[in-house]
Amino acid sequence: MYLEQIDSPADLKKLPPDALCALAKEIRELIIDTVSENGGHLGANLGTVELTIALHYIFDIPADSLVFDVGHQAYTHKILTGRREFFRTLRRFGGCAGFPHPRESKFDASVAGHAGTAISTALGISTALGAASNPHKAIAVVGDGSLNCGISLEGLNNAHAGGKNLIIILNDNKMSISRNVGGLARSLNHIISGSFYNRFKTAAKRLLFSLPRHKTLHKMIRRFEETVKYLILPGGLFEELGIRYIGPIDGHSIPDLLYHLRHLESQQAGPVLLHVTTEKGRGYEHARQNPARYHGVPGFCKATGAIASSGKPSFSSVFGEAAVELAARHPEIHAITAAMKDGTGLTPFAEAHWDRFHDVGIAEEHAVTYAAGLAIGGLRPICAIYATFMQRALDCVYHDVVLPQLPVIFTLDRAGAVEDGPTHHGIYDLGFLRALPGLTVMAPRSGAELRRMLEFAYELKRPVAIRYPRGGSNVPPGACVPELQFGRADVVRAGAGPVIWAMGPEVDTALAAAELLNMDCCVVNARFLSPFDAELARKLAEGRTTISIEDHVLSGGLGTALDEALSGTPHGGILHFGWPADRPVPHGKVGCLRREFGLTPEAIAETVRKTAAP
Picture: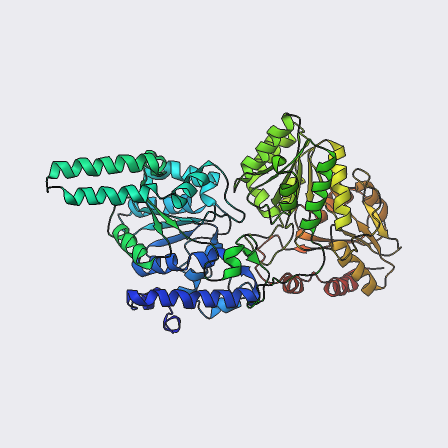
């Protein structure tokens, strides 16, 4: 067992090169075992094992900075940098984070959870190294479709300015989460699948070595080979940007990786891009055959590949079905996603209405503004993006959709806390969405209410955002849903005692807390966060304690809406329950996080008993 000998990159360097393939197999087994138990990102990490081993084998990390894009491909990095046993606690509360973070290890150069950040970050580090005459390198590992991201392209455009110490590793696996899309992806895929360039290079080398050793002739042939390479490969694009291009090479061939990385380590001729081709899910057949399905999993049976399931319909799946049905009745409806076809539930839509489905890649800003253009052209776009990623397109939501009041429907999946931690918690969206004038924001309690809200949003013909969490609802799929009235909340339990406001599935948390309290509580489903039902809030608050429960930080969301509504009017005490706004919420099972932060029905009831009068 080689892996047991490695507690740092220095230990890795003691192994002979011919032992690294066996080490890669051991690392894959550890990743599969851990993710099957704890959940996590499987496919991308199985594809980057050899690449990460080779990087640590050649470079002096952390003196050389290793920066990951979309850090869900960094598990091998964690295992090789003193976190082998700690890695077994992956995504558990207090355990190993699913993404790099400098607070966890000195080997993690930066936070890495969202796409497109590595090139710009590494370029900044490279510039700083150059300013200090430091010969060490800044290495950006870009993969899972993040080269398509607008931030990556901006970084590439600027790389020539301070990138003397910059190395970009393009981990090209043809995938983001769903399959890569766009012109750049097609260009890269053509190189991988095609054999013309490799045949040409082999023939050129044979010709070169068969000719007399004449320097001028050799230079001419080399120049001719480079010219043809420039025309065939995307290296032309990078070369025009001032970035030397090398590749593509096999990202699972350790000898090839060591040869090229050793060459790059010894030179000061950056910026340079090494194009590496890898296979997502390599080493586990289920993940290899279905890389999108095994991108991020809650846990699975290692023997059969069966993925853990809650057994109830998820909000994502309900949204997908509802979108298909709505589009069947309204041919002007188009659906947009940013590399999240499967995650947002839009796979059925893509199958049923392929000509009206648009996956724009990891480009949330473009997705929003593209939706605006579709609306200007008379279509009715539904733009499905995770809440945490919608943060990246805030200006586009405001400037391109809300200001002109275009009828774009935004569906914000994964709104609320998730296991992945602070880079992925969707708990900040209301803080900016509620501040946008003319944007209607809704939160469904159940899948059935989500269906009704989607229909309502279509009929409203103005900008709408519908936020809902990962997973499903405790409300039966066929439950009756009261009619929606614009800007009006719904009293789901009448009572003369404390008034508990909640949004989304937190209504069920409120009902459970009300049962425990035995105080004749009134429970209100907010439904609309903007416009908020201030009239009902004031009516119910006089002489009574008002309580809010939300899967959002205690700033900018439901609690803030209540404070604004009750300001300057008679009311009793106010208690707010939500995630803390003064510090990041860590990773861990959501149930564990709720217990830690007092957001279970039992904890809420106990706090209310201590502080609220009936």
